[in-house]
Structure formats: C-alpha cells, structure tokens
Image: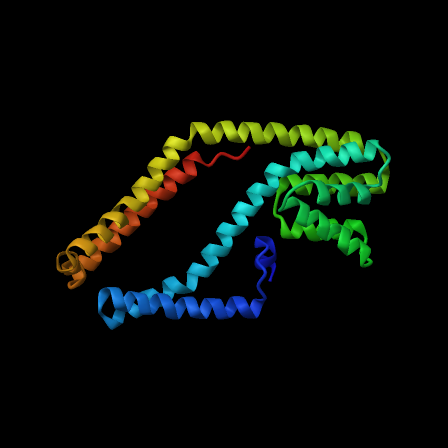
Amino acid sequence: ALDLARADLKLTVTEYIILNVLSVIGVAALMVILFRDLPWALPGAVLGFFVPRWWVKIVQKRRLNAFNDQLSDALNLLVNGLRSGYSILQAMEAVSKELPPPISTEFARVVQEVALGLSYEQALDNMVRRIRSDDLDLMVTAINVQHEVGGNLAEILDTISYTIRERVRIHGEIRILTSQAMLSGYVVGFLPVAITLILFLINREYIMRMFQSACGWVMVAVVVIIVSAGFFAVHKIVSIDV
C-alpha cells in the first residue's frame, strides 16, 4: 500500500495482487508461445512476477524526480505567502492550487488531512513517508523545529530553497558530464540482449542451439554475470551524490 501511494497509483492492494497474478500468467504464456517449449513457462512466470514491481519502482522514481524539481518553486511560494501574512497551512493550500502535480497533489493531501483533524506536523510526516526526498525531509524538519522553538520561518525556508536550487543545478551539471558514460553502460548492458532477440527473429534454429546443451546454458550464465557486473560498475561510478 505504501509503494502504491508513493507512486500515486489509483490501485488497491487487492487490484495490484490481481495485476501481479495476471502478469505471471501472461508472461509465462508469452514465453511458451515464443520459444515453443513448455519449460520456458517457469522463467516467464518469474519475469512476470517482477514486471509489476519494476513498473511501480519506475513510476515512483519519475514522480520523486518531478517532485524534487518542483520543490524549490513550492518553497518560494511558501516564503512569499508567509511574508504576505498567510499561515503555514494557508501557504500550503496556495501551493496546492498554483503548482502542477505531483507536488500540488501532495500539499493538497496535507491540507485535507489537517482539515480532517490531524496536526500539520503529523500530516507533513505522512507526506515525507510517501515522498522519500532528502530535500523534503529538510523542509519538514525546519518547519517542525520552528514550531517548537520559534523563529522566522520565511527566512529559514528561503535559505533551504537556495540550498535546494544549488543542489539541483550541480546535479544537472553532473548528469550532463556523466551522460556519455551512462549511455555506454546501457549499451554494454542491453546490446547482447538486443542481438540475441534479433537473431531469434531472423533465425530461430540457429540461436536455439545455444539452449539445447549444458555448455550453452553455462555460456549464457557467464555472459549474464559479466555484462551485469559491467553495467552496475559503470552505473556506480557515474552515480554521484550531491
């Protein structure tokens, strides 16, 4: 349920489980049809089991990146609202109306939860649980500390907004500088798979010989291990925390 909330997917847990079962059956049947051999149903079922999970993780990552890109603008709106005399809750409501999703959706949830009786500290903690963002955690911590000890919240959020903008700028520069290496990692990882699929479509008997003996399976296992190690090594090198 938490993973579905983080991805903002309008699915219940039961619907997701049904989708997972259908994925297992569908991918297993597809593998049997493609390879014309019943034992391929087992790896197809395993692949189908993980496909919905990968999909949810991809949606979560995209949503988190979009949220982080919008957080600086949201903080600017909060600062301007506080300096105009709004309360923190009114400023959050302004963010939910002025900015596009996903950040407007999350701040609207905070406002709704407070309207239903939760304290805004608890509502903000719920948002942090849904959005695993270090920048958001920093903002919520600053708001909670200010609520306990006092201080100029607008000035604090303005400083945090500047820090987040600089982090986003530096992260963008790093992403540009490492894009070629990242592309090389994707090529290294997916080129053997693409070649295998092309050979399978062009000449099925030729490529299937590899899967008809133990030696062929050993070769496939070695290739998978080596290519995966190379891909993750490149990905680890170019993944720089800011």
